[in-house]
Image 1 (cartoon, rainbow, N blue to C red):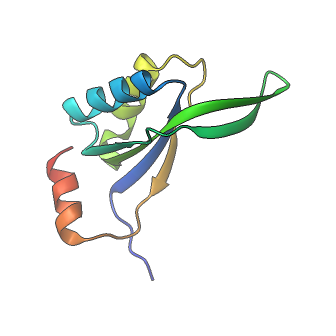
Image 2 (cartoon, rainbow, N blue to C red; image 1 turned 30 degrees about the vertical axis):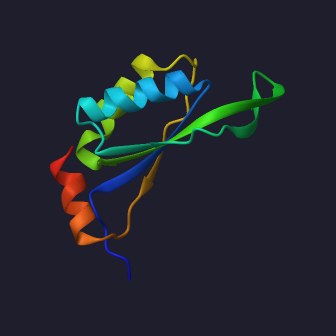
Length: 108
C-alpha cells in the first residue's frame, strides 16, 4: 500500500513561454518549489470558457513542492499569471527516491 508523503506535484498552464519561465523562476527563487519543469513545446488545450469551446496552445509547468508551501505557491502563481482563472491542480506524491525527496524538502 502506498504511503502518504508531504510532497506534491502542481500543474499550471501558461499562455506563453516567457510567462511560464517567469513563474518558474520566481517560485524556485522564493523556495516555493524545489524544481519546475517547463514544457517548452506547447500543448494543445481544449476547454470551455464562458460557455464557448476554446482551443489554445499553452506551456505546461510541472512544479515540485511540499504541502506546507502550497498556499504560498498558489498565491505567487495567481499574482504572476495573466489568466483570469489559471490552472492550479495539486497531485499527491505517493512515493519517490529517498534522496530526491530529501533534496525536495531541503529546497522548499
